[in-house]
Image (cartoon, rainbow, N blue to C red; front, side, top):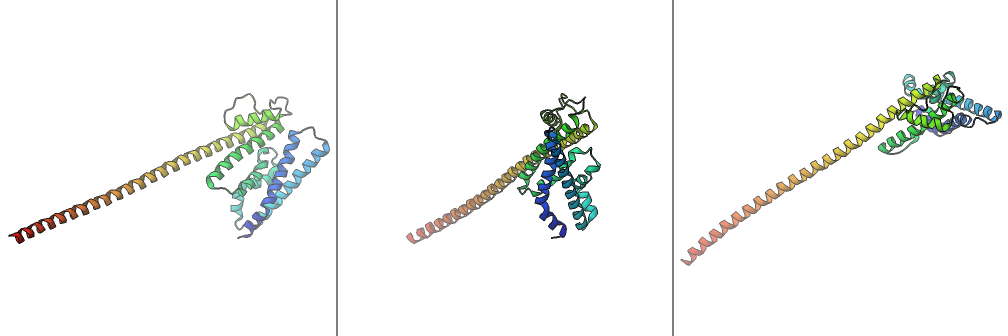
Amino acid sequence: MDRLTSWERRTSVALLAIGTGFLLSWAIPVLVPDLPPAAHTAFWYVQVTTWALFTADYLIRLALAPRRLRFLLRNIPSLLVVLLPLLRTLWLLRALLLLQVIADRVRLPLRLRAVVYVTGTALFLCVVGSIAVLEVERDNPDGNIKTIGDAIWWSLTTMTTVGYGDRFPVTPEGRLVASGLMIAGIALAGVVTAAIASWFVERFERTAALDRRTEAELAQVSAELAETRKALADLAHTHGMLRDELATLTARLNS
């Protein structure tokens, strides 16, 4: 086991806890805007602390990686989390690392894992997208997403590409969140469609294999029956020849 894998295994639970704290420290002030100023300050410090821990973990993993360029390409969500203070408009990406850590810790059969992952991802992105769009739209005078109910309804219609149009973002940040949710919704729909198609193909292949096995067994039984019929015919022929010879011998003895 290399040092990078060992480090990731030792820190996966801690990262899950840190990611949960990071998400809650961002979501609670959005959902409960009337918190005391001290609470807002405390949550802000939690965000800064968790971001610093994410950054430290990313830099350590980068230093331990045997192939750093490959590590950079395979861990883009982690890099985006580190860069978030410089990219304040990428609200939806705040939760990507938490989602990645949860997915890495799931230990289920492949098909069930895919179902759980897709379902969990859809619900997770819906909730996070709702909170993100509510944060940037609620205080806008031209906005029409003012409550978490409005935001969840908008997220559902956006991810499913229904788009009723009764709720929509008007800020650049909100439209960026909408773009992310639309892309995610299309991608998840493609994954679900592919999984269903794969299930049907597997069922058809299993049925076809069973049919081929049955046909092979029937062909083997038919061959065995043909051999048995031939053996019986040979036995009957031999019995007839013996009977004729016995009759001939009996006739000679009587004469």
